[in-house]
Image 1 (cartoon, rainbow, N blue to C red):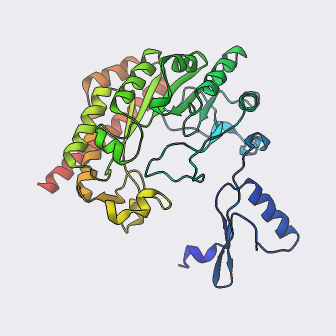
Image 2 (image 1 turned 135 degrees about the vertical axis):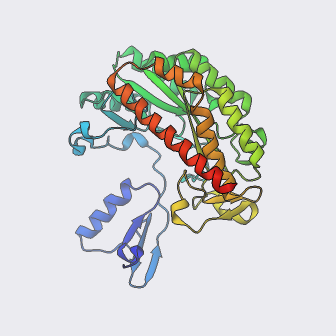
Image 3 (image 1 turned 90 degrees about the vertical axis):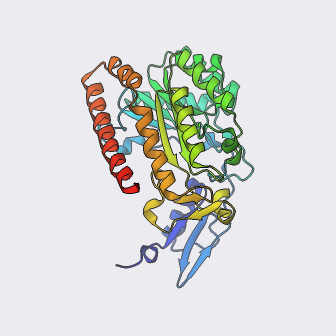
Length: 363
């Protein structure tokens, strides 16, 4: 089979809106891609990398996505338990993140967030509702990057009596109970907080900029106002030990979010982790490992089997708790809820079976 790389003539890096327009214009005029900022292209046997294109500062200048081209929105069904209503639209109100996490790639090296105006955001929300969408998933790295702006968006949604449910992500040190209450009052039903670890040393190692106390306070406040809380964690952090991984599992159980996920830290190109691999650990040569479920990176303080084992134990211990199962049973309200619960039960059964196989193999 021909190398897939030989089939690619050009690629765009960075923000692509204006780059795409320029490429189309040049191709229609019969011109090449030389000097088109933000492109990489093949010139015979050579690969040409053009200069970076400046980031778009006025995000309000961009048109809304042409969602009408998606066709029948009923065909797009999100994963179970990740939505309240259908169909779901995806919307972003800002670009960039002001965090320093070692596993995250940032286009803007200054680590600044560029925000759309509140009016632009509300206009797109109303546009989506006019197209028949009943829920919106905000995919900003953190919707609360500007506290006052986030509060204003929530209050405007409520003031305009916009009827939709929504989901967002935020950093635990950028929210408080009044903001989370405003989210809830405006139709928000769930929020994701990147907890990442239950060991403060490891939060510092990944430059998360948060504390275990802030994680607890944010999760507690969100649940007290009635929001569902999702908290992803990760294993394989540089310097992390197997025992510290077990401590993260205990922390997740004690935290008791509504949803917890357990990933393996992944060294994507362009991140601080990838650029300093020798300092932190080893990298896998298997392409299949480059998922949050694999173990593409192994710190010097752990083994690949340790990471796999921790993920299995985490899912098993968190989701097999009788209190957790009973809570989910009592929350069943519809046939769809029952279907989701049945899928979850099958996954848990598979996890138990796989865990037993892994344990026998290790012993």
